[in-house]
Image 1 (cartoon, each protein chain N blue to C red):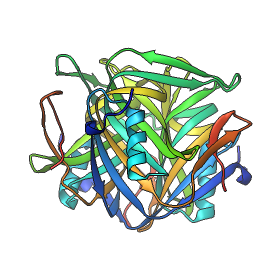
Image 2: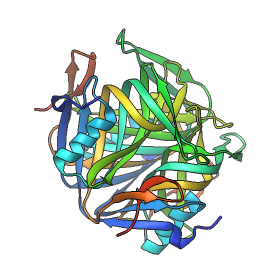
Image 3: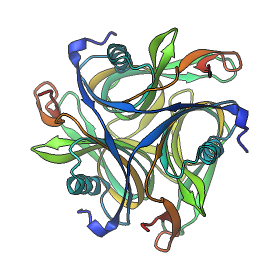
Image 4: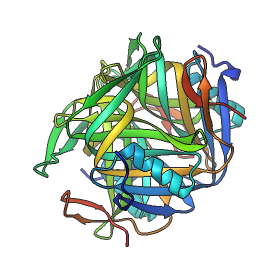
Length: 149
Length: 149
Length: 149
């Protein structure tokens, strides 16, 4: 399969600031990064995180029905991987994060991270300076995606 | 186990440019990043991606027989994690990517991402400026790996 | 759940240097990155890695008993994802890494990466310049975590 060039939106960013965060007990991972983005004026950014969660809610987007299916995990899990970004939605910083969780035997669960109650978490957030990275309604997927200005 | 110092190749890079990409429906994730690397002159870089795929082909390298084993996943999956890099192979930008995919129940499949048909994907590609990062044949592993100049 | 603002420690960093590493056969991934951090004077940083391991030891932190449970994987696995950071512990560079591993069928195991014997690995380490990022004993979790000065 070849990439069709009109099928890729490219946004270029220049200088960046690096934020390292330690999230403490009982905060929500997604909400905390959202709050820090607002406080620090991060309008575009990307992050990774590792740590451990007390519970989590994972999402799966049904590509046919265009509905989210949610799985709540009521267990203490390692945050084996977490990757995400910050952009604007309705003019406000919005966090989109995916995660891989693992239990005491190393077994995994993964998906879109809707909620994650923190036991301990270490986040590296790169603030990007450049064009507006704004989510708008995409008819084809019924998701809020980035569109060039 | 200690690290033997001659067992690590280190390449140092300076300033970088940050590219944020939105990949649209039906393009291949690996091919699209390769194409953008060529268009933007990215000779060395690293990236992360999240999103959702319609189908994927994962690879596993057999460390004894030195052959790739492939698994094709004919299902809509979340791209729970994707990490990769861009370097040169035969003088052209080449993408090496690994991924973790998840289904509607959060169950996972992972490996070397050989092909990934995009439903929606958000990529953060950091362009690195510095020495040539070129893949050459490595006799011990029979893989194309980075070798210092 | 809302983020409580006193529950987030924020560390801001400025300019950074990008290191790309190729780890060779039989070195330990965690030890190798630790050694490079010491050699290059990396006191704070974050990294990602992909590749393949010959064996690994994964950890899971029991959030009730505050003890690590270890799982040793005596098998050749793809390093499907690896995310981590470098900070100081007792004044010396210390590596904290989490990983997702996958077998020949794409099945996964994940957790805190305590040991990882390398078959081949490609690492992108971002060196951060800024405040001291030092681990100190945290009474609530009984872990060594970052505390603002």
